[in-house]
Length: 279
Length: 257
Figure 1 (cartoon, rainbow over the protein chains, first blue to last red):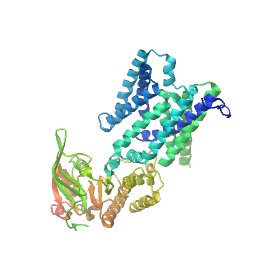
Figure 2: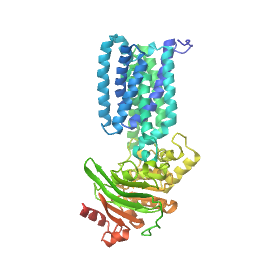
Figure 3: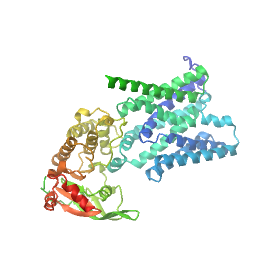
Figure 4: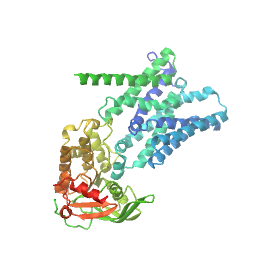
């Protein structure tokens, strides 16, 4: 465990400080991926990959391997399969997701049963266990977060061009298949990085909700990205504080804060538009 | 321009020989041969379902023909290294209204393949974007979100994106479908500027040639195969006036259906 540092309430304990650091990294990284998948109308991709990551966790229990590694392998495999099905037109985006989604859930439930692990251990991954993170967990999350930042720093501009117009990007010579494949892998990495923080069932929400809020008022792609990251971080800090104050599940509290922020932004935006129309 | 066919050079902007393509067992393109010269403004017209967009995708290397050969800027399309020399506006509906991107951001994506897609934009890139927006008369909208623009303005943004590298070949698939007359005039000015000032070859797929009729060098009429290949005067000699009588072309295309 890293040394506990003096900090204000509610982040005055070692476990809350680890949770804060992990939540901020995830809340900053998830919308960076989400901004692309939302624009590509693949908002549920995180859910689909997450359910296969659950099968990976179960495989880890069954094989007695650290579940994060098996989840990473399963999630990357699922993300790549979804992208292949989508890009080759074998299935529409939502059907490709559904095929992978149900298969992953079914395989996960069977393997969990075979592994004979307790419900508590399974729930740690389904709903997150952010207050029980170890220093090693945090370092893994930070490492995966840095990998996401570096890869997006290199391919982010090309991904934006491909998201705007895949066919024209292919004609102009951009590496469309490689960039789409990289986005799929990054989605999988983000889900696995966030798995212990928010839980498999909630992680996709942090890819989508801050982006949905940001799109309501941002006027450029750049500002959409920056606002989404900001909203994600605010939701993470507020959600953790609320969890400490009222003894709530931290993962659910963070996602609920992101939902409330979306509601506030949408209502404010609606009121502004009404005022403009009336004026 | 306007019937002045440029001298034939050894390297065509686009050349196809005996190209055929079928979707499953249904022929879409049958034995098509064509040649578009550098600096030539060429229109490809035909009834709905006549294979125009399929042919364009073959010419650009997005589809592999079942038979025949294609050369784009002198080489087989998929072997072309500097693909940024092709500007392409695919057939499409309007951009998504909620698209969170400014006009400048969208046009700037056109520069990525030329400068190296992993590099940040340079001053030259910013100047090229400004020049392309000037060519389509959208400089005043540079910081506006594209989702807030009209259909005609959005189409000009996409044309500016295609123009931003001063391409040697500009391929436009139904670029003025559903846009009003003033947007069509602005479109005509920007394409003519590209042909005259930068010597680009232009292949325009469109049902609505009225706005550019006087500027065309070359017309190809397609109904799975090429049924007319010549200049607009030859077409006029067959009773199809592209500019004077707006209904001539649609009526003639209908008679081909």
